[in-house]
Image (cartoon, rainbow over the protein chains, first blue to last red):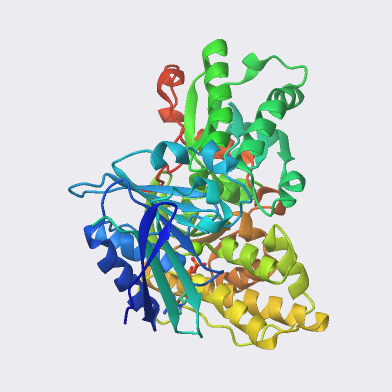
Amino acid sequence: MAYPAVRPTSGIYHMTRAYTTTSPAETEELARKLASDLRAGTVIALEGELGAGKTVFVKGIAKALGITTVVQSPTFVLMKVYEVQHHAVRRLVHVDCYRLDGSSDLRAVGLEEYLHDSTSVVVIEWADKVPELVPHDATRVRIRSVDEHERTVEITSPDRS
Amino acid sequence: MKVLGIETSCDETSLAVLDAREGEMHLEKYIVSSQIATHREYGGVVPEIAARMHCEVLLPLLQKTIGKKPLSAVDLIAVTAGPGLITSLMVGVQAAKTLSYALRKPLVGVNHLEGHMYSAWLGNSELVRDTERSFPALVLIVSGGHTELVLMRGHGSYTLLGQTADDAAGEAFDKVAKLLDRGYPGGPVISKLAQHGNPAAIDFPRPMLATTGYDMSFSGLKTAVRYYLEKKRRIPREELPDIAASFQQAVVDVLTAKTVRAIDEFGPRSLMLVGGVSANNALREALTHIGSERQLRVWLPALEHTGDNAGMIAVAGYYHRDEASLKLWRTLRFDPHLAFII
Ligand SMILES: Nc1ncnc2c1ncn2[C@@H]1O[C@H](COP(=O)(O)OP(=O)(O)O)[C@@H](O)[C@H]1O
Ligand SMILES: [Mg+2]
């Protein structure tokens, strides 16, 4: 189920779609589908409380990129980089800002290099903690728990058409 | 031979001098400088601060470790090359390369996780004396960033049997401690609370217990604790120990179930529990119990060696001494994602 809406933000038109999922497998599959035509250079900013399903969503993106190794939570190391075999994307950069309250640490571990790299896809969990690092044309994914199995996933992406 | 161990992969700066020979080893000097107090304010390790602190304390610590003895008494330099925080790793690796070059002593890079496995050798003289009798060993590595079940057939011979599919066990402790508003690091906080709680009070889920294979999952557990807290709205202080104990029991049950299954399939001759979470008393007791039931030797690191330390790096370096070289200072790289089992 999806409803399209258009709202302008900072000069770029954004399109928001909302989905409902009822299991982690469904959330992962939704992410996989949405990521199937992912362009290199895309930044995906994920928001949602602890246990909302951000990491589950990233697993789906990884699948779409053909990553077969397990995508584990990067909370402890802040950032994990996966090399990928894909026609356009060279690597998936998985960032987790859960433990941070500023962006200097992500700079220290080398995130900026990837943010400006046109062959990487960067996904950032807890992106709301580092607003200054999220580019204006990032795709935003907001996940909310409805109950123990249901999540709403709201995706806002720049309208490129 | 004397091995100088250097560890700076995360938030502990540590140096050790290990005196090792066939069947015998002891730590001559051993220093850990923890940054926990600094990072506690932030609820976790802050890489930039960690790196700066490593830089500040490393040389004074080296001087303390070596004392009046000349550095030339060292026969081998072992340093953690990864995995870890890039900014922290580079401090130790750079120092080790410099020492190797200046002193003309062989250098060897150690994988941090393999180092944790060798923490079991520290303080267990029987294991050191007759290591072969303990192989194959089933090793459970549990820390803030890792949860792995490994079959160790011999030095350098490892098979990864299973790992976490999402959160590390130690990460679950940290996140639940934060949900309970109990601060960082979560391991000691939860286990202390749990001492006076009833582990059967709340039936938290044991994810992936029923699935075949040895992979584990802990993200459902943190989510279940969150739901529980939200449903209750207000948690009386008296209930916190029960929540902590029930959560901890769920973690222990998942880890032990997979361990027992691996014992049945692979028939190891010993059991090792290593990594930061190996300090957890409930987990130590559970594995000791499994070991005595199945008549397996159980090797636990001394509590002071459960966390990151250079002693274990020196031990791992000793067993890898054949790979050490005088030229490695030119080429040794630190790698935040360094793989352990290739
Ligand atoms: N519809 C759903 N979509 C995603 N996750 C769900 C859903 N229903 C329940 N869950 C559970 O929520 C948790 C999400 O965990 P995780 O992805 O680690 O969250 P986050 O990364 O946002 O902290 C998992 O335990 C998962 O099983
Ligand atoms: Mg996550």
